[in-house]
Image (cartoon, rainbow, N blue to C red):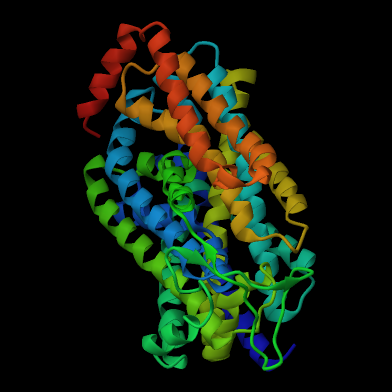
Length: 520
């Protein structure tokens, strides 16, 4: 290993030790009760709530997946995705956060999303609890796999290590500190990771802009590529066996620009709909100490999100101007942030900056594992299988579940040609369509019925698979992102089913009204 690589590794090693230390510090407190382990005892402050929500949400795709899309296809796909996500972030904080914080307490002091939805409709037969928990297990396993892929690509690119080996090592580190510290540990560490992520993005953006000769020079350079710097067009790299071709002058070859029409824009903007169903974000709303502090969190979270998304998109564009032939496959294009960091920064500083990818990946994967574990341990095991389970038994089952899901995620992540953005897109659609519609209707429409909740979740989650696997390959109008049709269809099913089924009991209606003004 070369001297530069050693410096990078040392810097990243210090960061990993810090994160594991956070887990150890909070291990005793987390083990006191499931409430502490899964929701931090509802004691988060506004800064930690905001930063941990955004850091756990964005994951490694913010520093690798999104810049990779911009590097490969140009501005349009990345910027419309970023606009949709920024809008979804703000609306979610504005519409859902305070209502969910209050309602989760009123509805039996729920500490998981499945528990809240089940309590909201006061079900005796835990059908909602079972359905929602199973969907969480499935989609979070896929999500965790995307994070493990990021580990493999990061260390494989930096040190030339075998992808599968370093991917497994990264997964073990995440498992270790999530296993020990629970929700509070990952929320506190997510705060620091959020700071590191935005700092790394802004630093690489600034240095890249300077190295490329300034913004006018960058724009003039990339505008020469057909469709690359357009809102309504998309670049088309010329490929042979999946590898972009290079002309005699050493320039990457692109075909005629593709069209980026209205339907495609709506499809891409629909990424913002996913926020309403993201358990790892929604849990932060439930965990803040005072609902009155959510306004401050909304401002912090939205500003962080807008700056980070803009910088990540810009890094991909700048990277194409600086290193046009460095990355010649779509999968490898997701390493542009790594390439720029190592080429533009001193090795030790580059190691600190690249810890931003570790930060993004770990802040997400720990959330995914913890929520999936709680879905089984608290909602299925205690809620259905063993209702008299003790706190100790719940904690034991949750940790066994965490290990099992991690193993499945590692198996899925073994393919080193996986494209992080595509893996995340599928899981994002799954959560957004399964939980987004029913979360909105549960919080905002008291006429929503239990039957509608069941039908809506099954429709949304099922349609993601049907559209992705069966309809999307047809192309044309069916080529849109599966989240949009699945989300819309779920909303329609919820409304129709609610109107044709019996109105909820008066106790449910009263509780709905109480949640509007309940102070907590």
